[in-house]
Length: 197
Image (cartoon, rainbow, N blue to C red):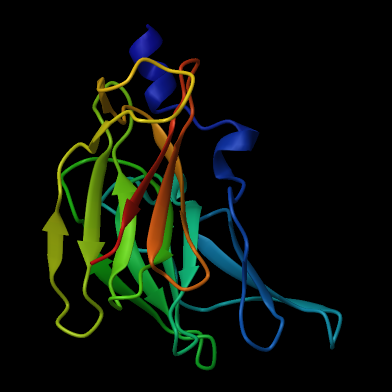
């Protein structure tokens, strides 16, 4: 009956995994069922946005934001951790736009913008391998870059080993967007960094 755990919702399964802050200092997160909240510290007020997270039919109660990124224009992008769907949130109107799934896999753990204007993210959950993807906000297209593989070259480890990112749980960009860092979440975790062209 262990397969039932994949569909059983516990308290920790519906709490937001990440928070986002817009340019006005308002804080966003997700809450049951499939809702986005906004906290305005200036007004000391929490409001629930009318639009819901994108969902796959029959899985609405599993909606939860596991990743956020802010575009250079201030638009927020988020990932529904249950179904691996990307969405765009306009902080001024509260409108949520479903941008679909970059890969036919659940989960979306990390998002970050590169200097090329593209959104980099990871999707996938065990027992499958993580996939790295890009989304072009201008053209609206996805590129599934597959399971990331890096040649290990850091001091203190055997050189030249090909390492695949199995459970990547975090994505971050350098301040100038020149580098994207991918962090794993397992016993032999590695930090993998690549340069945005």
